Length: 246
Ligand SMILES: C[S@@+](CC[C@H](N)C(=O)[O-])C[C@H]1O[C@@H](n2cnc3c(N)ncnc32)[C@H](O)[C@@H]1O
Image (cartoon, rainbow, N blue to C red; front, side, top):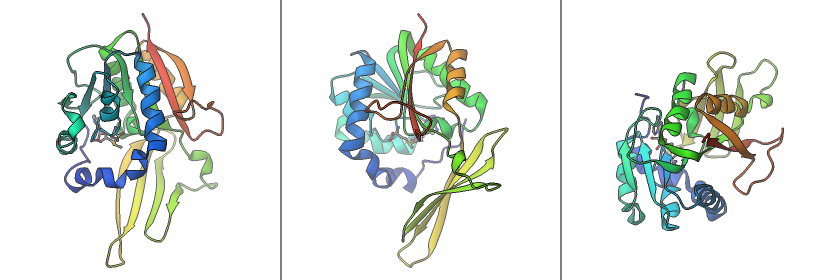
């Protein structure tokens, strides 16, 4: 079982910390696009969290289910009014089975990188395939690794810098296991900074395509955002859509 990092205060404060991701300008195009990809069929979210995406998707009239590793995140999810019609199972998205087959399985907000080995990421694709109807879609939202921003010989890339918060991605293995650690330095009320962070496995779109192929899927679309802007060599994020072969 992968380590559960979304426990206690991390789960209780998740919505506050991810407030930008709840803004209509980000969330509405996400939900619009996923609703279209589901084609009115049932949808399954891997790593459903506190229901940021699943709840508004269910409010569109879709049947939505979710798999989530963290019991504490599910407590936060269940406390929300829109959660009632959504079935969830506590478990690892790489291995856990939930009843039913789905026209859409989706995994957003860079969460494939929470699986820190290639074997687990491949297993996640295989588990998505296990849940899909023939021709069904698997959608992943994931950052393009920021390695081109590394200074020559350097291993760290800052991604946020303000009076009260500094964020740095520190790469620890660029070529073999593809590991980095996001380090967050937050100022407390007493003025001191505290550090938190977690490890991730970065993965290129091309490697995701190979994992999809292993799981019997073919690439249908790749966009750089949920409004379907074209994906280019300058894109910092990728929305990838694969279909399970019929
Ligand atoms: C960044 S949050 C995203 C939550 C939600 N999908 C969203 O977009 O707001 C990552 C979530 O992935 C969950 N998670 C991490 N590893 C997991 C795994 N192996 N299986 C299922 N859930 C996992 C965490 O517990 C957390 O709820």
